[in-house]
Image: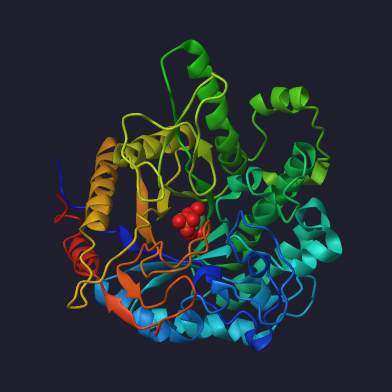
Length: 463
Ligand code: BG6
């Protein structure tokens, strides 16, 4: 078995605007859904009053400190960096016809900095945030008009960055709307399934339109979808558990099925009928949907189990709740650790779609301790990432085509589900605590040097 990853394999990390940038009201940025969720994506939505604290307002101040951070990523050897554009920097309310030039200029500067070090940008158009104006004035993705606003935004950024950015993604973890409707589709948390699936339909059409626009505008551009890879195992081999697992996995695979195949899968007809859901789907929507993504990207943190038994204990990951697997250990936040699950997931997706994959999130959120001398010995993170990357290599041996790997949070950032900075993912430590105290100084952890070696050796240093 070969120990080296393919020479073309891209290595890097992934961050999201609302979890790193801060500068929440600078240079014309509008209010986003994330600005209204100081407690994280499941937290209560609040009206912001002057002086109210949200850790995200400054986050890790990437907006001002990006040159230094990009330099550190380059030092690790990154060849790709996944970022997201804050939609509200470009269209503060969401429905403007003209973009905010200051917002566009910020990303020009960021991409220019990355180009200095030959780091290829990968850009998510919408990562857990959208303009609040679109919710207040239009009802978010519940309104068909939002498709047009999103398409306008997508076309604007494709035009502006077409020479700099070749890898694009539409919606981060598009399947999470089923579990956090405000974050995903801008609907009230208590919305019924009819409303949520209608909003999801609009978002799927918008995603397909963005794929089309990218193909028209960006020379050699590649655009993918982004799934939360929530693979479930049957809790037992009882047929009822097997069937439940099939159904539960379809809940998230449904999104990939539409985005890759270009139409709704047959199994959804029965589901919609049984749930009393009737979707308004235009003839034009059906045509729009027929624009498949070029590659499939996904996040992977954990697996879980499914069972037909009622009242089984459940475990909450960042989005999904799952039945715990008795054979797996868990992180300090209770997320079960399953490196082999990554190989299984990659094979599942590749068998199903036969499209290239990109692993755009994977990592361990942990409490890091500074030693008396100031060093951070995050051996647990090294072990986690090593074991997952070994499974990526196995999947490549299995024949799966994978373009690259961006670990989640290469620099400490604000957790999406908990809005904590103490849940750290980084190779780079950021001096800031959950209450906002700290100098924001950056420091290399032990894992920094480990990842540097992995990249340099093209995976050969993995154990
Ligand atoms: C993914 C999200 O769900 O998981 C990221 O795309 C998020 O935005 C990551 O940060 C890890 O989750 P958390 O809650 O630990 O930040």
